Image 1: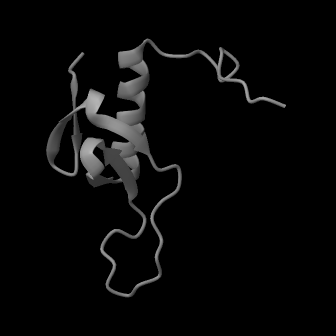
Image 2: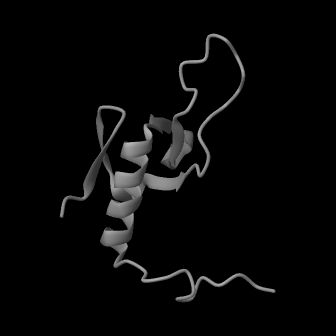
Image 3: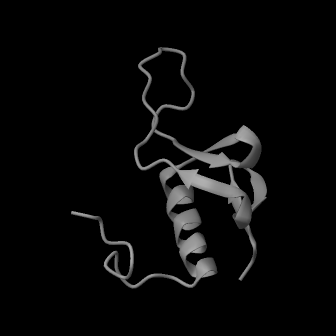
Length: 80
C-alpha cells in the first residue's frame, strides 16, 4: 500500500490529511468552481478539493492505512 493518495492531481501523503468534508461544497455563487466537490483539509491550513470518487478512495486508503475499523461501535460510540 502506498502512503500517498491523489487529490486534485497531487500526490499527498496520507498523514497530512486532517479531515474530509462529509458534505459537498455549496456556496450558491454563480462563478464557484468547487460546487459539489469535497474539501480535504491538510496540515498548515491548506485545503484541496476532491470529487466524490476521490473522496471515497481517500477515506478507504486512510482506513486501510490505520488498520481499519469493522464498525462504528468499535470504540467510536457516541456518548449519550
